[in-house]
Amino acid sequence: MKSDHMSIEELLSDESFINYCKKSCPEDVELWESFRSENADNQLLVENAHASFFKLFNALSLADRDEQELLLRSALDKVASGRNTVLPEREEKTAGNSVAFYLRLAVSVAAVLLSVIVIIYYKKDKVNGGMKTFLASYGERKNFQLPDGSIVTLNGGSELKIGENFGVSSRDIYLEGEGYFDVKQNKKLPFIVHTAAMDIMALGTAFNVKAYPEEKTTETSLLKGAVEVTLKEDNNRKMLLHPNQKVNWQHVKKKASGKRLTHKQTNTLQSHNDLMKTVMVTDAGDIKEIAWKENKLIFDDESIEDIAILLERWYGVKIVFTDNIIRHYRFTGTFEKEELSTVLNLLQESKSFKYEIRSGETPEVILFK
Image 1: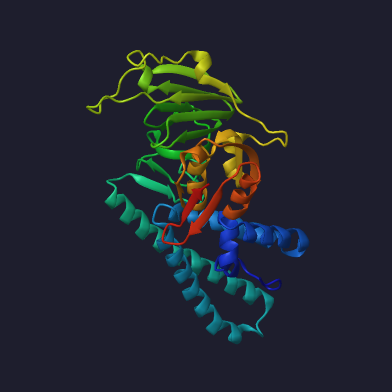
Image 2 (image 1 turned 120 degrees about the horizontal axis):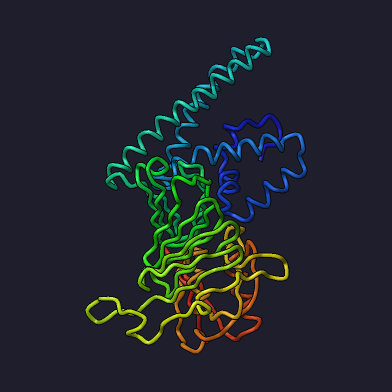
């Protein structure tokens, strides 16, 4: 890390700083947070570069992550190489000319990036028939701003789609996975999140939706404002949520033909009290339902079989059980920015099991007695 004469362009081309912005590497996050607190003179620069990262990547997040970063780095490298050939001729110029040069440099960076963004938007729209797609791979969390100004954070293994007229004629979102939404108020255009089991409508609010297709439940947790939840699998029953409430819907079963049964047919009709819960707040003040946004894992008397699903998304691994007894072990605890091995070692302290991590394209974690 350079401590003197840094520029926004240099920070945006630094891998550790990108990891800090994306919160994808705890060590880099800690490194840059410490740097900010210990270097008051550079704090504003770091904050501006951090803001610039999200402005650039909000648009670029529509394409594949690796392609985005490659294109962005290439663009910055080209501009930086051009700057290096010009700077020596300007070292003895006035301060005013120096400022003008850096303004032109900023314009050059913006122009190159704009062309990249236009190409990516065209490419993605063409492939998805006008639908724009945002993805968060296993092992990452992604932040971006929607065209209407709403802020979204996607958890690992999630996909979100919006139409090309989002924010103009409608604000419909289609979600598979988990997302936190801080909604920009617009009374004329309701903000609606569609999942397989429920629709969530809000005007101006903040809420979390967890709707992974492979899980048994779909959950909406409200932090502020109000939302109306429509339960598709219960004759479109509507429920109004108030702050710190959540609705947890158990998915209906399917017939052998693949058609869904109703809850009456399965004798598992869920009452209002069964569905409506209160969000969990830990002694430290963390809200369990959105702790993932702060790189925290919170378990509350949960089976390791359910915990394994979270760990797979969190660390981008595959967990394999060799003994069914282990599946039923239950754990309570909070982990913040911990390595996978650290989490497993701490879990071992309360229950007897062993593990082995095998490398590969998708690393495997083998759990055994």
